[in-house]
Length: 243
Ligand SMILES: [Zn+2]
Ligand SMILES: [Zn+2]
Image (cartoon, rainbow, N blue to C red; front, side):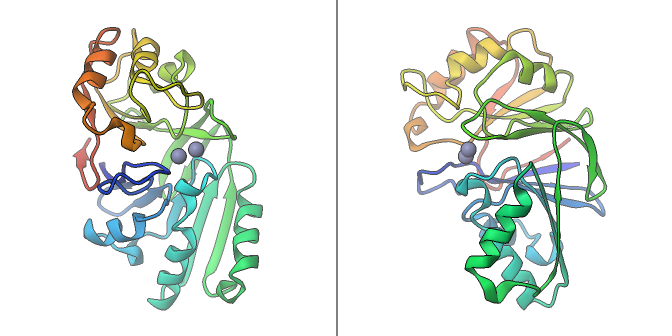
């Protein structure tokens, strides 16, 4: 399985990181997890393209995770692709209904399948996935793909989520802000290190990075390292990891 970070930024632009999007792929399967602003461009830059992604799995409905959904639908329609499947937590159906009510001319242009999932096991685009409820300002699901990959979505760091990822080869975790920023609904490095202490994860990639993190990468990794001695790195847009 290959994991490609398409967008490692957040709701506030850094100039280098687009909003959230992660592509999972192997020989014949492709799944886009989240579809924030800029992800459609990154798909092209990654050499995959919107024509080859027909399924999107959403962690939650904040704009920085869904902004490119209709642009993806429109691009696929214009390219003659006939379908798009959107899978996400409760409310995903009404989200798509509401978006298409605003952009009415996009209705029925492709065969749009929408499916709602929760904190349980399911299959999407040929991948076996398990969902887990995170701690965020709206309902959000973390997703685990077997023993290979877990994505936290947006979440505070807490032991339950670390346990959910335990035993995984790669964990991509929200680490929105450096220490010293007073924040809820997202972790700081100190909180993340505390939650991860005792977890057995092959490698952790930090993502969902606000501009506040610029220039603070080293101290953020050091801060996590005070409680957690595993391999911790920063994700970058267009970084691919083979797992
Ligand atoms: Zn969010
Ligand atoms: Zn977000």
